[in-house]
View 1 (tube, rainbow, N blue to C red):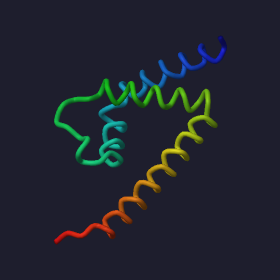
View 2 (cartoon, one colour):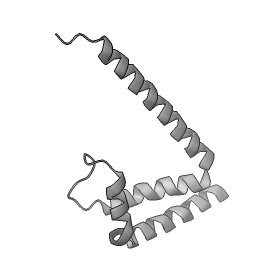
View 3 (spheres, rainbow, N blue to C red):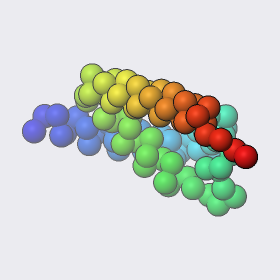
View 4 (cartoon, rainbow, N blue to C red):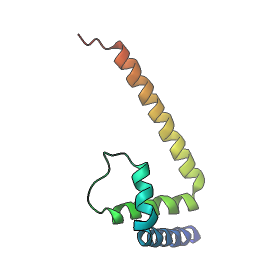
Length: 94
């Protein structure tokens, strides 16, 4: 029960501050990090703020789980990159 309460408090605080400081810092920071394909002209303040709040609260409450998830995603991306490179080398484009 305590973990849920801490997660909810962290979620609300991160959501509040990311929406409050959207124009000054959060939007500029996201524009530097996210790829151009994901960017849009719409004001996605709420979508990005909720996503950041969920990730931030989960990282505060369960940091080891988030670290292991990031490691697994990185390993899978590396495997996919290596297999795609191998497949492109074997392909005959005549």
